Image (cartoon, rainbow, N blue to C red; front, top):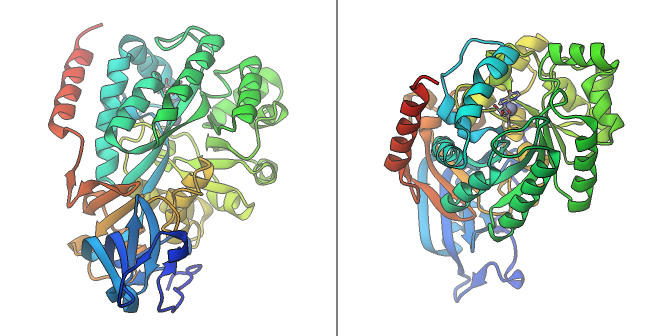
Length: 467
Ligand SMILES: CSC[C@H]1O[C@@H](n2cnc3c(O)ncnc32)[C@H](O)[C@@H]1O
Ligand SMILES: [Zn+2]
C-alpha cells in the first residue's frame, strides 16, 4: 500500500450535503433524486487521498452533491446514470502553466537551450505570426489535446488573452488567462500602460464567462522591470488576482541577475513585495535552502514543469524540499513548443521519476504527491481550491475518468500507482466540467475537431513559407 494514503470512512450513508441544503431530494421509500450519478469502479477524491471502491458521485446543477458508498447506491434515483465499470474517476487535471497557442509551434525548434530557443526561434516566430486569429486557433488545438488527456482547467500565459478567453468560453473548459506584461512591444501591446490596460479589459470581459478568470502574468524577472512589477503587486492586491511568472528558470538567469544587479531574482521579487500567497513561481530551479524556506514563509506556490525543464536542460526544481518546507506545488506542461506535449499524465510521471533521480531517493515525490500537485495543488495555486481540485460535496463537477482495463494498466493492484506510473492519456474516456460532459466515451463534445485540425494545418503551411 502506498504511504500517505488515507482510506475511506465506512459510513453507509451518502456523505454530502443533506436535503436541508436542497441538494439531495428525498422522494418516497427513502429514495434520493439526483440529476446524474456516476459509478466508477474506483474513486480517487484526492481530498482525502484515498481509493474508494464501488462508490458513486451524485451531481446536481453542475455540482457534486454526494459521495455515495456502495450500500447506499440503491437509495439514489438518478435521471442520468453513468456506469464506468473498469475506470478510475478522479478530479479533472489542472495544468497550471501553459502557453496554449504555442501548440501551433510544436517541433519548430527542438534540442536547444532556453535563451537560444526563445531569442533566435520563438520570439521571431511570434513577431511574425502572433495575432488574435493565431492565438484563438492555437488555443482551440491545445484545448482538444488537453481535454482528450483529462485536463479540465489550465492557466495560460500568452499574447491576445482576449482570444484565449473567447475560445475557452465557447468550448466550455475552465481556464485562468494571463494579463501578460513584458518590457518590449509586441502585437498585443506597446508598453506597460497598454499591457495593463488591455489585461484589465480582458478581466472585465471575463465577468460574463463563468469558467474563465484572470491572473497577472508578468513574463520573467529578466524581461519585466521594477516599475511595472510594482504596479502588478498593487493591482493584484486591489483586485485579489493571483500572479504567475517564470522565475529562476535556469542557473544562467540567476547568475546574470546577480552579476547585473547584485541580487538574485527571487530576492528582488521579495523586495518588490510580490512573494505572497497567490504568487505562482514557475520553474524554480537553482534554489538555495534559504530560498526554499522563504517560499514556505511567504506562502507562494511553485509550478513545477519537469518536462520543459528537462528538454531545455533548464535545471532541477527541488520539489521534495519545497513540499517539506510547506510550499504548495502544482504541475504545468509549459507550452507544446518546449515540452513537446500538453500531457498531464506524462507530467505527473516525469515529476515523480525526476525527483527520485535528482534526490537519489526512491521515496521522493510519491504517486500520491504527483497526483495532488496535478489536481488540488494546481487549484490551490490558482485560488480555485474552493471550487475544483478534489471530488468533494459542494465543489464543481470537474471530473476525469480513465479506463484501466488496458494491457498497460491491467491487472490493478493499486489504482493510484497505475494512474501515475503506467496509464497513458489515451486511456482517458470521459471528462466533465461544471457537470457538462465535454468528453464522452472518447468523443469530444462541443468542439469541431476536424475544423480545428484543418485550421492548424493551414497555419503550419503559412509558417513554413520563407519570411
Ligand atoms: C508574454 S507571453 C509569454 C511568452 O513566454 C514565452 N515562453 C514560452 N515558454 C517559455 C519559457 O519556458 N520560458 C520563458 N518564456 C517562455 C512565449 O514564447 C511568449 O513569448
Ligand atoms: Zn512558460
